[in-house]
View (cartoon, rainbow, N blue to C red):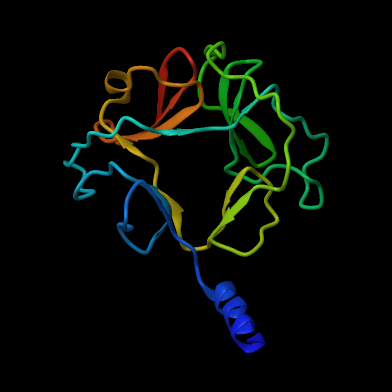
Length: 185
């Protein structure tokens, strides 16, 4: 029995995780996380999808400030996204700085979290990671495929502050700041 448990643990460490949400299979081997509602062909001219659900970025009361950003400090990893409720802005951490991805929006619809954070988050793609976050996608050869939405500014009736998706028409990342959509190419 011990041999089977040991074999299972070793095999589990060697497997490279991929996760799909709302669908039974993945579109390919290059994604670490993908969602239902994708376009059928992924071709640039294929914009059709009935999906109107995006991902919600974590909403923080205020963006954390770090006096020194070096590999030895506990700072966010490049590519960390959040919604800052104090300034109502979607932000991304890059090379030691928080970059505003939207103008100031409206955080009044953001539901306050009254609980206490327990645990260290979920890691997909590896058994451990030096990155800290609620959801860490850790892979050297796989990427997140954002939910596809056709014209989110028209089709998503009640977007939530910090919502993020891929707009199939403009072929860009779309983020909602509580007032309006911003698009990044």
